[in-house]
Length: 458
Image (cartoon, rainbow, N blue to C red; front, side, top):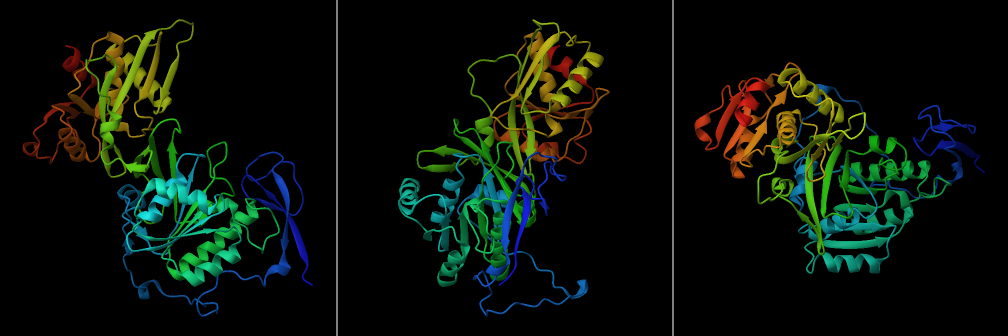
């Protein structure tokens, strides 16, 4: 009889120790070690194996002898998901999708499974019954375009038996924390089980060139539950964000071996499922009837997608001894830097004022190109003078008050023109090599922050 081995695993980061420890030496968390039994006698339990039943032996190859081929991508029925993935599904890729409970992860994946044209898809659920999935499927669509099969199972050995019989072209697992392998004697969702089940699915995906989607739970801190190695094992990590009480959802790429990690997809949650938002600028700009102070429009980029967002600022007299500084959707340290530039270069006394900043639409912006829009909104609120809603801004501001150039300015200008803006304020150093004649929108160039406020406020 094989020897049974037990080990202690940190439930936060997956660190393994032969004995119990109070504090994890890897992630410094307290009381996270749990004993898990690793049964070495369970190796005869069936797991995924290749069609021939034999283990494939790989041999080393010289770099010059390896043929460089482009990845063949399969377009899904979801244009937003294709954009975030980098242009479609890559054969054999493993994609992990994380998000809060009720955000719409299962709805997004079931919608994909039902609408992929002429594809045989296996949807594995360890959380819901077949009747529950059927009810959601009827709400999402009336006529499925794909051959979608539902399997309610949590044991990996039974799942692989059904996969060998069905031979699906895409596999969706909801969720990875509910699966368990007979190789590991621990409860589903533990570090060992998540790691082993993911490794088995990874071997299946690579050997059969079948794309696999894994839905993952998240912790109260917002990180994907399970060991950090889970995110290292998969090819792509997507984060599904948003507020459950609002209709808009954001699909953000955290890691992508086959594309950019700065891409963004936006959805609207409706009664019949998730609807793609092809023009996010329309939802990020408020439809107001009159001009209001403290509101400006900035041109930003999320990956390859240009977006116009509304920046809102409120400057008021401080009611307490220490002025308040608050920013939603923007780095508060960068906001403090911009306030210091305004005080130094323009003479505005903001050190005794409360300053509140908000990026409309509930998104986070890290693009420095909205610096000028934020500074214009702050001064607009400070002076209580409105700025025309037909003007937008695309420029970075330096510490000495200079207006710096930003990348891909032509895309930003074209997006502003498409949405009906009449003027866009950019850096004087940004239009080298840009053909002004092809744009109908008026391009205003500035080089210093003083020129901007002389232009806007006289």
